[in-house]
Image 1 (cartoon, rainbow, N blue to C red):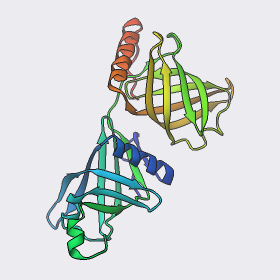
Image 2 (image 1 turned 90 degrees about the horizontal axis):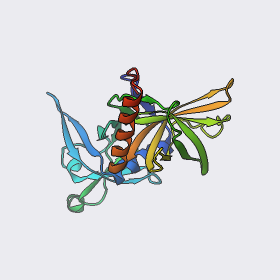
Image 3 (image 1 turned 90 degrees about the vertical axis):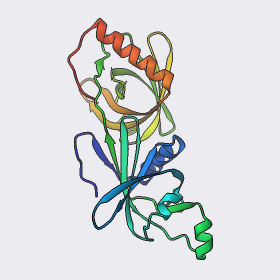
Image 4 (image 1 turned 135 degrees about the vertical axis):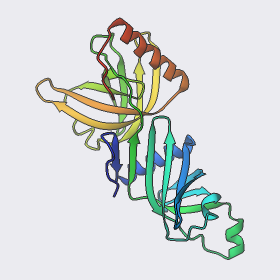
Amino acid sequence: MYSEANGRAKEINSTEEIEAILNLACSHRWNFSYMVASERRQSSHTTELVAVNAQAGTITVGSEVKYSGLQANQKVVFRAQSGGISIQFETEMLGSGGNALSNRLFSECRIKMPEAIRFNQLRKAIRVDCNDLDDIRVTLFANATRLQGLVADLSTTGTKIRFSGNLTYQFKQSRMVTDCRMRLPDDSVLEARVKVLGFFYDREQDISYLRCYFLEIRENNELMLADLIQAALIAKPQPVVHF
């Protein structure tokens, strides 16, 4: 089990969430590395995440891992990073079977699908209160349902969204990874892949709040987002609050 290093680190145990995050890291080519321990020290080496096979319970990584002196069933720590987030997990090497020659010719290495992943937000960002700004409408896709809400606050790394009514059932799995679309005040559209970090239902106001972190966002959308936040800060200076 991983310990929580700070308030922005989360441990993920759900098999579906682990698969979704690893597939995201694979498709977007996150920086991937693994740790090798010797008697004197630990060293980090780069590799790549080639494929994820959830049905077989395996992950395919680059051949560097196979030739690093690690043995089958040996525990190895892998890390991946993209922008302001990182993941880390411990798993085992898997034997590739067959004869020695075919193993050497095989250019990739298989490891066991991890039972847990440590998900960590690396950077802090100022967020702005959007309640006094023009409405930023949000469409969020949750369990094959399209939900409509409004942005409550926003930063370059994430957002808090408010929805009318009690959506506890829709977000009972409050660590899901999903797609989000925001329509900005100038009518431009920002699309992002987000990870839900938390859910809260305000019974008195009958409003549900969802805290999300941006996993993937297009480069031009990042510029749009930064410009919007900068304009909001100029129009109404706000206290520094960290996401």
